[in-house]
Structure formats: structure tokens, C-alpha cells
Length: 274
Image 1 (cartoon, helix red, strand yellow):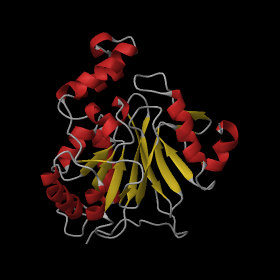
Image 2 (image 1 turned 90 degrees about the vertical axis):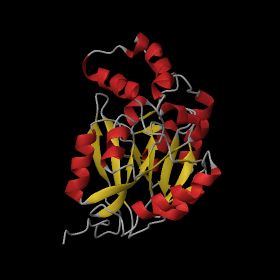
Image 3 (image 1 turned 45 degrees about the horizontal axis):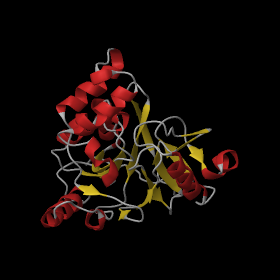
């Protein structure tokens, strides 16, 4: 029998895995969940859905994916921001004997969603894909239309990018899976409480595990920096409010950002507290 991934270190802290992906070196995070179930059904039920009749199906899907009866070997985990390089993410998951019960998106920028399609397909569409509704147009079959504005803003009309960046446009033109559920501030999904953190994008959110004192915060707060607000949909005033929300967390909280090394709330509060 394949040994299960040891979710916790001897210290009791959950082991967080990273895979650096894509031309923009996005951090894709892998977070082992607890024993079978780990709140899958409750989390899916908490997530808003566009069609109420589908809620039961989505709940059943998420619960099965995060349970010991899953068709996939190993233990369930959350994959946060699969930005590119699906093969590398899958290889890491298999080496750790984990499978994605959840695919969680901190926001919808192209460098955080590029591997969404092949990753979900590899696991037969079973992972529960969730994000904030405000960024929902950035995934799904017509995702490229939403991202074209970003490419135009970056001075790349039509997304005609040569070199490594061209892969992002190519993936978006092919379309992406849609979200199975939408999350808002205060929702609970598995071990996470969702924090609304707009500013970098309208639908930026963080996944906060209070017990473990950690948050996957996307592109809001970095070590020694904060997320840009000049991209389409960015808003400086919203960013300030989101930073205030983060700086109100326990100072020992580890921030796992979308790029660069992990930080702590205490370490960044003194530098960037509004």
C-alpha cells in the first residue's frame, strides 16, 4: 500500500509545497488536507453557485473528491493558483501521493490560471474549482475575451506574444473550465476561511487557515512589496483596505504569495502598514 503523505511536521504545522511555474515564476501552492472529507461537502455547500439545482451535484462531487472513497490514490489536497506547467504540478502531486480535491484561485490573472484546464482534465474534472465571482469571466470557455484587455494594456494587441509568454495567450484561446463554485469574504472551504482582498484585481481573495497561522494571499502582499494596482480592474483604495485586513491578522501568520518567498504579517506590517 502506498504510504500516505505526512500532512503535518513533528511541530504540528502543515507542510506546504510549492511549484514555481510559467514565464512569470508564479508560485503554485500545494496544501495537504486532513483525513478523508476535510470539509469538502461543507465547503462546496458554502460556495455560491449560478444555478441552485446544481448545488447538490457540486456538493457531492467535492465531497467525493476529498474523501477516502476517491478514485485517485493518495490523500486530498488543495492546489492554489496553477499558473502554468501542468505536467510539473501533476508530477509533484504524484511524488507526494496527493490529488487535488480543490483547485482554488486567488484571482483570475493569466499567470495564475494557465494550468487549470490540463490539471482538471488529468483528474477527470473531479477537482472542485472555486474563485471569487468578480474574476469569474477570466476562466471558462470565453476566458480569452476577458484577458485581451490585459494584453492590450501591456502593449501586446491581440495577445500576439512571442517566446515563453506566448504560451499564456495560446492556452487562453483554447478556453478553460468554469468555476464550480464562487467564494466571498467569510466563506469557509475545508480548512480555509476566505478573505476578500480586492485591489490587485476585483476578485482577489486569500485562503486563510487560522489554526495553522497561514494564508495563501495571491498578489496582494509580498515579502518587501505589495501587488500592483495599475492593471485593468486594479484599485488603490481597495488595496489599502485589503492590506489593513491582512495586517489585522496574527503577526506570526505566514503569507504564501503568488510570487517570491513567503513572508510574515509581522515582517511586512512595519514596512507597509497604511
